[in-house]
Image (cartoon, rainbow, N blue to C red; front, side, top):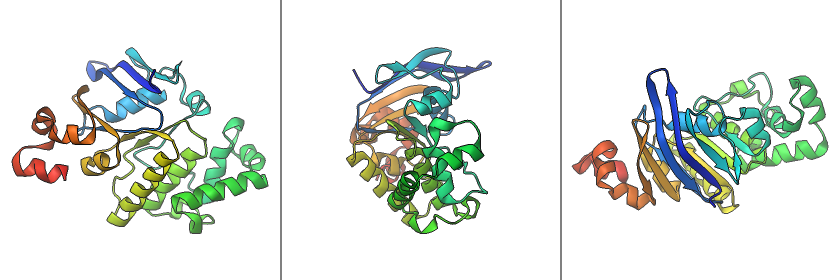
Length: 255
């Protein structure tokens, strides 16, 4: 049995079918990328797995447990952590305190009480270690609202890692990053994969996604178009026609 299985996931908003019978598997320790043009259903797929939207049909199963249709906070406690296209830190808290909130996940009652209980020396040491791992060791005392976009992306990942996830879901983490920031993100994802973390990556940047992924799932108009190793996806004629373009354009997109 695969670690994560999406089974015929379908989501509709009124008359609009955003996701139509999408199925794929993710093995433990893999990084699987979901790619496709705008409106393909990538974020809806993420939301269906994480519990933010309820599928009309189908289900997502993580390590034998159905996670689709469950509240996101319950899935977070069960080891499903995610980042968002738009970073959502607590702007008035320090970078360190943002991570401490994640470390206090078992005490989600009120923010003030959570932070007081999460300030043990062990939690602070863990928060600082996570920030060091993602490259924010020198920004721990800054307010999160002062961080540039690239650092906000890294903070999102550090906060997700604070949940000690079994599945890390990354929604457009490379969007808007400069070349140096993207390279740092790529190195971080490779380290996390080497540590055995299972990851699902939604990414509009095809080149970045296929470079870091073990396998890729291609969506178009809410349906799965193709699935396979990065090189198989790059050379799939249907993918080239529907998404990557043809001729020189396809070559540019897949380098």
